[in-house]
Image (tube, rainbow, N blue to C red; front, side, top):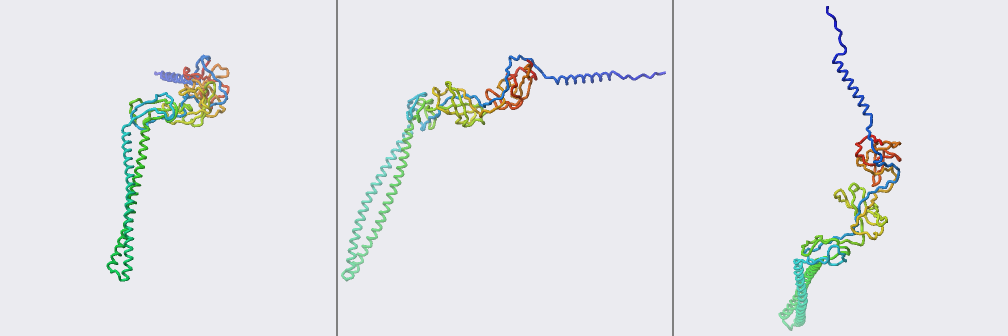
Length: 415
């Protein structure tokens, strides 16, 4: 007789599934347990820079390098072209206003001047000849008119006498009409002669006026050409230091070419270079200062150059008081440039931590100062000494401000 076999509850398959589920559950619980723990790192406290967060005046400024430069610089340009025939002074010499620096020669310009001068003398001769001819013509015309007026007077007498005699029947009508026609003819000739003389005089005066205008323009051109010839002698426009002269004897120079520079030594300014990050915050009127011979010297921004080169732009600053004695052109000094007025703020000293965290978090010490915990913060403005703390810290707390590069972003530093 067959027996009924009992069905097994724990089969090999079910045991395998149970073991797998148990392993998964154990792994999950262990992972959750580990995730709740914070990573730590043991460090030597004496090797760290620890700073205290404090409330104080935040003075927003940057330190830039200023270079002493002349207050005014004059570019020395050649007004006329030519080749250098003589060089009177070299670079580095002190020159007076109007002192010769270079002598240029230009044969073409000299020849044009001579030709224009000859043309002017010809115009002067033509003008004088025309004026002389006008005077001569006036005398000749006066003589002709005088003779014609005399003939008219004689013809008038003859006509008046014959008119009376004709009325008395003494002379014939033919003689009467002859004297009448003669008188009328001469009178008409006088009118024509007067009109002709007026026309000739007006024509001569017009010619003289034209010649005078041409002569005046020629004289103006000749004066300008003479000035151009004088410009071949390059002179110092102002007194100062000839800091640069870029030509030698025999060199060919074109009109308008820059050949040197003169520095006005009557005053100085400070030229500073600023990072382009601050270009929107620098404007005329900002103040600055630097220390010289144990005294604080005040400056003010007078001009901002908008052109950016290699990530930097230039700013001119002038002295508020008199230029300090002993300062020299080309001397460089650190300048403290103010970006705003001092104001109360929560401050944290600058340090290497910013380069590792971007100012987004810091390690804050606990009350016992036996460990430092990572904390998110928000920083605002910056000067060479302090950051402005906006959120995340309170006055009196201590933070690690040295570099974090060796910490690997651990959550807790244990001392």
